[in-house]
Image (tube, rainbow over all chains, first blue to last red):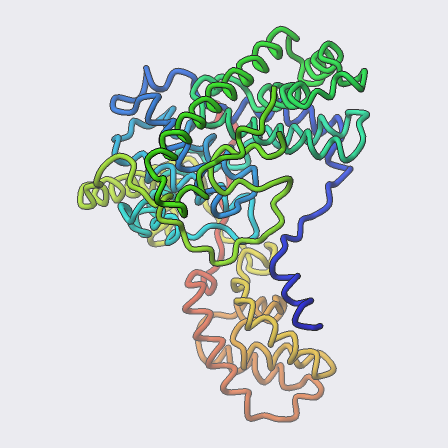
Length: 292
Length: 198
């Protein structure tokens, strides 16, 4: 018996309960102000970078997300790491073949900020196929945090989602599903260049609306009806409802295009590796379960 | 739709499994943008590091390498050891294993002496008070010896054999782990608020 108990303690994550004292309006207002100070420049591909192009950001972001998911990082780690990456690239021109080093370093720091057992430098280097060394990563870390002026506690959309859910008169289990779907949208947005210009609060609100829409929750609950929810959330984050709607539509079309890509990838990989069944098991087959 | 996964290994509703020495899957281990020139990279990183050091030195007019104030905007002033909060100069937290055994030992003994013993045998403990006293004195032997005899007056430290040992280890640790702890602390002070406006 004792052994079993010990096992349980080691294997599951012990999270702190949500602190009701931190989920109030005063904190939310401060967060809305704070998110402006940690926002990247929208035009860094044009103005700062010489070698790095938008499609390369997509490549490194997709890899970072894969690492974060495989390592079971907390959900906020990936968007926070992308915030670091964009902010660094807003100031500092970088060589193309160092972009992965930057991505790994951003995950390294974001993981330290958000996790009790952070990712190790050694593990991250393995994920780059050992193209970088741990000591390089540690030096890069110092360079990165210095360039970010040690402003590392940037707001993520996840921080806002909790506030929105607290304010929404919805059942707890519904909230949990909305949260999960919205978080997925947030991760998706962080991989896409188009969303750099949107502040975390906007991405969070757009993701919540898109999640509610995708789950068809608006039909049964009047508060969750499209009109009502967009109006409510645009007031919470103090933006124009049209802006929010545009963001949410952008999220939905991004989901659609990435699903199409995933399916194409699925079909091609299935035809390629018919004999290799082991490989098939790790292709993302369940994305097809999505209905919008 | 709750099965949406953006990439492989996406969890279901909430991540509940801890990271357990999961070895990276080969599929995710890839070099994205070609080989890195390590020599060039190291040279650049070193240069960035040097630039940062110089920028800090300029910003605070303080030579961080040699712990010496320089002439400039800030007027650096020596401060008495006890006047600043202890977390500025206490030893770093011990690793978890050592910490556990330290607690065990201190629980075994009554009174206020166990912490003293713990510091001697474990090297480091959370007893900041003791470290506080140690860092107060200058590094020379006689002061440390005084300190020891002072401690011995406390009740229940009847066994005198660990005493010299303790003095040795703590001295070593102080010089190893916080090289600046023995010197007086210095905190920056703006020479005049008016100058800052210019």
